[in-house]
Image 1 (tube, rainbow, N blue to C red):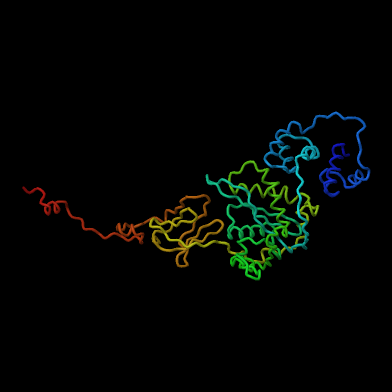
Image 2 (cartoon, rainbow, N blue to C red):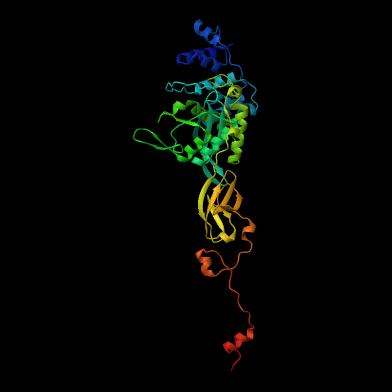
Length: 409
């Protein structure tokens, strides 16, 4: 049953143009109840009702602080308050939040629904910064949404390069266990490097190879009309409004992604979706994705041309990896996968290391440095391959004293 204040809110929301369904969701009541009050025209209490203590009262100071932080999402606040001992319901919280919420006006956009397995949408979102190994990095959020079920995949990165885009997309395929037939994206530079005079897109060759490998049909949303891929746009906003405000402590990027996986399984993909009114995980049962095992995985490793330093190391993203001393001064290829650094020379693998995170770290294999022969100083200065020093005849000290005339008077 709705109270007097809730009925007043009902009429305020109706006057602001909210639909009956939206009002019912906001007040957590049936649509028939909303229609009844709109038809009846409201009511006036017969006598003033004294305000009773609210279960939210001990938590209002904390709630106001979170509002000042820009957190207005009732679901996020409800989770946090319950961890602090709040025993009340959501309606009390919604009633308190109502005066502080601002109505947002959005442009009308035609919504297109897609059949199961047909389409996935991908996008990036900027999410501030993160500290890793004492260094501040920009933080980005990759999101992938299946068009039919609204199943969501999220991964945080510190770069938006083509390598990260391809890896995150493959991780999304793994998460869903299959491939869509169409991939919808905006005109990001990792996908489209520009357009011809007639508007034809110039594809990033690496992304084009990737899409052909998986048999994906790539569609671009209209330039400057990101809302034409609104499902994933909503997903990015949902991550920023629902997940990130609830993250209190982050020890690393891996830790943040681990927390995101828990949120996906316990919140994002199991709550009733605002459009379908069904949990994405339930509609996902009907998704007809192409089985992932039918297609070999695309090689996303990055290749960098490097020269081995005179002290037998290769620099990769500010970190140093050892190479057998015989290759000092030579040009090699560093191949970077998700977890390994592979050094190749002439098509032969000469060193393999675990890829390290952070900056200015040194990764050494003692075997690479064993048996380094002495070389002349000019070779060491020039960085040429070290060679063995010539043998020197050993003579008694008396020979040198005789030549120098030591002891003569």
